[in-house]
Length: 272
Ligand SMILES: CCCCCCCCCCCCC[C@H](O)CC(=O)SCCNC(=O)CCNC(=O)[C@H](O)C(C)(C)COP(=O)(O)OP(=O)(O)OC[C@H]1O[C@@H](n2cnc3c(N)ncnc32)[C@H](O)[C@@H]1OP(=O)(O)O
Ligand SMILES: NC(=O)c1ccc[n+]([C@@H]2O[C@H](COP(=O)([O-])OP(=O)(O)OC[C@H]3O[C@@H](n4cnc5c(N)ncnc54)[C@H](O)[C@@H]3O)[C@@H](O)[C@H]2O)c1
Image (tube, rainbow, N blue to C red; front, side, top):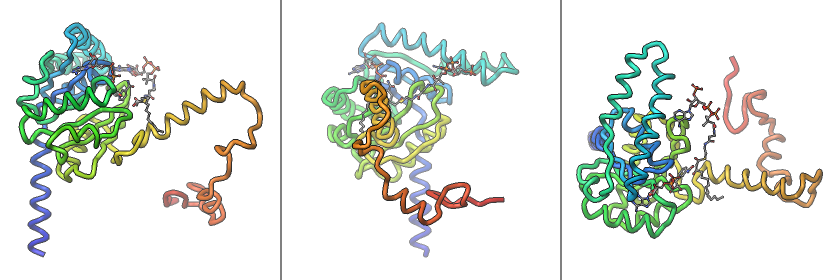
């Protein structure tokens, strides 16, 4: 029991220490996603360096962030414009821009990569950053579709590597998929979740599988919409396996698991 308690206290302490340690965030890539991630991180009190290889792009991204923060502040501080102005200036003060990834990660606690969706380019970047970032720094990729394990393989910190998959537009979308690979340590995973929550996001755990959760559902759904258009919206496709009854649902119906109305389904519901 004493051993168990020690273990729990140690695990808790390590996790709390890692999460509390995420103060300095480097976001690599200042496009649609990187700018959104950098904005929300700065808005939530982190010191952020946003990096891009393209000097013009990173400057424009900072301007876009300024405009987006105005929208956030207008809503968040509708009744108190003065507090809104403080919120804007405090966030912008915390945001630096750079074109030098190497020097920008030297004091990073967390590096979030949101560059072009190309495995070799991402691997090359992380291999370089692994040489210079502090040993405690967590690395994360915002990739939509590439295996996190393959990207992490370019580094010697697979235990401190994971996926942080944000959704566009980042300042608006609440969900954050936190992806773990088998090597991701429990402390790293929990620190990523805690950081996600500190960013105001709702985190969901994902395995490193194609499309994670959302894109695995969204992409076939979008493709099917396009196929429907392509087919000319014909009325009936009895040969299409997509419309075949699903065994799990058939069994659940037979068991009276009709969801909320029957008090049980995929979940149990307490009717009051
Ligand atoms: C099977 C194997 C799979 C293999 C994988 C293959 C992968 C291929 C991947 C391709 C796709 C990549 C997808 C990616 O990985 C994941 C995604 O990001 S999916 C996209 C998710 N996003 C959405 O679903 C957003 C949908 N859009 C909306 O909900 C709305 O358009 C909106 C963003 C809420 C905007 O609303 P609108 O009504 O259109 O516009 P308004 O201007 O009125 O805005 C409403 C409200 O929001 C505020 N706001 C909007 N944008 C911003 C911003 N940038 N910054 C701050 N605030 C913003 C705005 O102020 C309004 O506020 P209000 O006035 O209402 O208070
Ligand atoms: N667009 C989306 O809806 C969305 C949503 C979730 C995740 N993602 C993922 O996020 C990542 C970025 O997507 P995006 O839409 O923001 O792309 P984007 O094209 O808007 O921006 C990418 C930025 O990365 C910069 N860049 C390229 N190589 C670089 C390098 N080596 N170092 C520094 N900067 C570099 C480019 O100059 C560009 O400004 C991709 O992996 C994408 O799959 C995109």
